Length: 355
Ligand SMILES: NC(=O)c1ccc[n+]([C@@H]2O[C@H](COP(=O)([O-])OP(=O)(O)OC[C@H]3O[C@@H](n4cnc5c(N)ncnc54)[C@H](OP(=O)(O)O)[C@@H]3O)[C@@H](O)[C@H]2O)c1
Image (tube, rainbow, N blue to C red):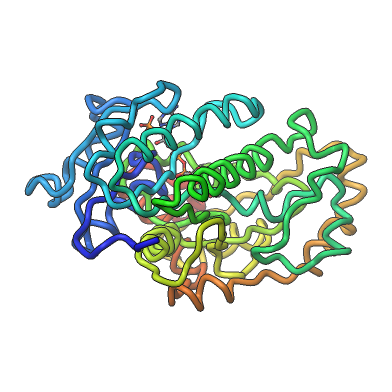
């Protein structure tokens, strides 16, 4: 199907969120017309940063109220759009029927509009790497687009914490199948990893999880990452750029998915220690990492760390198709910290000397 034309109109769901806000910004920077979909356009805390963008002043960016749970909520908004970036979260990933129902609402609005040629659906690397049996990562350690979790594993259930990964897979397939049936548009899935980078609005300091983790780190508390998995960062601006380039690409095909990550990995304790190295002026005192896991999980720490260390993260496919360049984590972390302080008004814990 045709990529979104230069200067065309794109609707973005979850536009007040961390990633959605940057997708809006990159689209505007590249000359597109943007329909930012939020739940409440009258909420200044969530929408103020969108209204402050120059594109809003000129009219190139418009704000629209829509709750994904309401059938038909995008009918009017999508009419005349060339592309849709469906970035938004859903209320409950554990409810497979609800996830499917929400996909159906959006798909119906895309079909009804008759003008949309491409939908980019935001999934997650959880839909690549989350396995009910972590040892599956030893058997299949290359983390790339064609790697799927073992969906038949008995632990791959919402009750065992895999509802998010399952929900993302349901959405990926729902959109690809609907696009195939329609023959009028295609659906490309973007699977981002751990988004770090500048927040654009104070409310985003609580979202994340990764920028919120950095906020708590700055405040002097930090917890080990679940399953001792390293952070697998992507700068939120590069993630947004990936979304936009997938809208623009003439090479992508319906049903494909692309992972947005730099392929760097970082241990949580190293991240804490990096902040004072990157920003010595802050006088930040890094907290010790606390380990909230039960003893039986703690006993497996060395094993879990070595399993993750044996994995190979790949981003060849997205780089080849979109040419996107992923910036180094240091830049994302520094910009995240500075934005949390400047925009989020976070006050970092300081050493006695600095205080
Ligand atoms: N952050 C990451 O590191 C990461 C990693 C992998 C994948 N992802 C995926 O990327 C997407 C965006 O993540 P994010 O970190 O940017 O999330 P976020 O900052 O929490 O923003 C998500 C947005 O979803 C919207 N939303 C939630 N329920 C909604 C509903 N019922 N109707 C309409 N809008 C609803 C919210 O809109 P309002 O503000 O209007 O209420 C919110 O702004 C998600 O699909 C997430 O799974 C994120």
